[in-house]
Structure formats: C-alpha cells, structure tokens
Image (cartoon, rainbow, N blue to C red; front, side):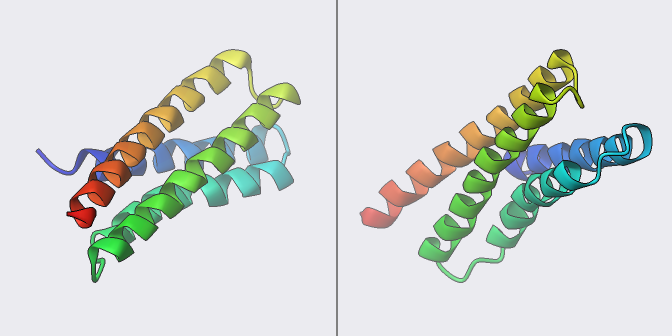
Amino acid sequence: MGNPVKEKSFNFSIRIVKLYKYLTEEKSEYILSKQLLRSGTSIGANVSESQASQSTPDFITKMHIAFKETSETKYWIELLVATDYLTKEQGTSLLRDCEEVGNLLASIIKTSKSKNEK
C-alpha cells in the first residue's frame, strides 16, 4: 500500500478540480471557485513537497501548511454552500473528505513533533 495521506490529498485535489470545472462551466462562478481551487489543491501539493523535505522540521512545516490549507478550503466550501452554489449534500461530502485529510495531517504533525523532540 502507498502513502495514505498522499493518496487521500491527491484524490481530494481531483475532486476540487472537478468542482472548479462544474462551478465555472455550470454556475458561472469564477471568484470563490478560484480560491477553492488554490487552497484545495495546495493541500496535496504541500504533502507531496513534504516527501522531499531536508529535515524533520522542514517536513513538519510542509505538513502544517497543508493542514492550514484544509481550514481555508473548509471555509470556501461552507461559503459556496451558504451562497447556494453547492447543495448542502455536496458541501457535506466535500467537508467530510477535507476533514479526513486534515485529521491525518494533524496526526502526522503530532507524531512527527513528538519524535523530533526526543
């Protein structure tokens, strides 16, 4: 089996790209969707970049950036639901996936910090 957080963040990025296409093509929404595209795909990009870290602190920093991007992504999803660009069901599904990636990242950060302190 591969790297779960890398796989989940990549699959989440795919969902975000497809959502961006839907929002721009079907809903003619370009501003919020662009913000969502940036933050949602940045999660996986930072996870991927962390794999080439030069040190444990560098790894933790990249993972922490990815974790912060999950918070921003949640905000954009919630805003898209609140403004009726997404249904509640669509939002719930996306938020669940985002939360899952965020929980994995938080666990990795915590474990890496405790190992680094020893």
